Structure formats: C-alpha cells, structure tokens
Image 1 (cartoon, rainbow, N blue to C red):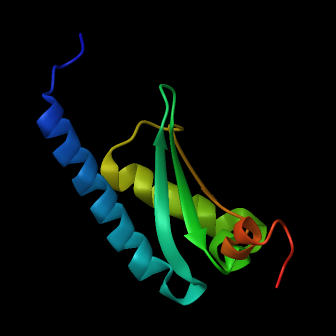
Image 2: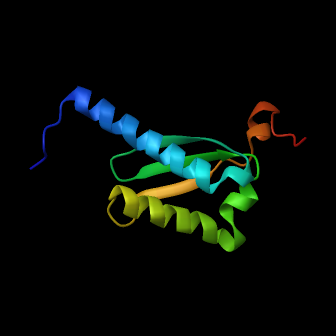
Length: 102
C-alpha cells in the first residue's frame, strides 16, 4: 500500500533532495568543471544527469568514478538497488554549438 503524501511535502522533499545532491556534487566535482545537475524521475528509476565541462574526468577510467558516484548517491538517499542511473552530458559546449567542439 502506497503512503499518501501531500503535494506541499513532496515539493519540499524534492527540493531538499536536489539541494543536497547539488551540494555533494559541487564538493566532489569542483575540479572537473561541475556546473549543475538535472534529475529525471521515471516510474522505474531516477536518472541523474551531471552537467560538467570535463566529462572524461567525471566518468573516470573505464567509468569507475561515475559508478562510485552512483553507489554513494544510492546509499545516501536510500534508493533501491539499481534504481539510480548517473550520467553526464558530453559537454556544455556541444549543446550550444550544434555539435562542434571549441
């Protein structure tokens, strides 16, 4: 049975989650050009998209660092196993330049 939660409490809880996640990623990825986070909630999982200028540093060698970040976020916020997926955008510049790197 699902627990009923008021809209006001849900908005506050979502805001606190995003603020804490942003603070954590700001500290963890300060040297990698971290500029923000986007959270997309779907019925089966929560997608966390990290916006950074140095995406290779965020991903780490063979994707190790992004897997570590995913595990920490999953444990810290109490998500079920496999329900969180972290990823990065290729680059902030690619979106604004039509795919051409600077």
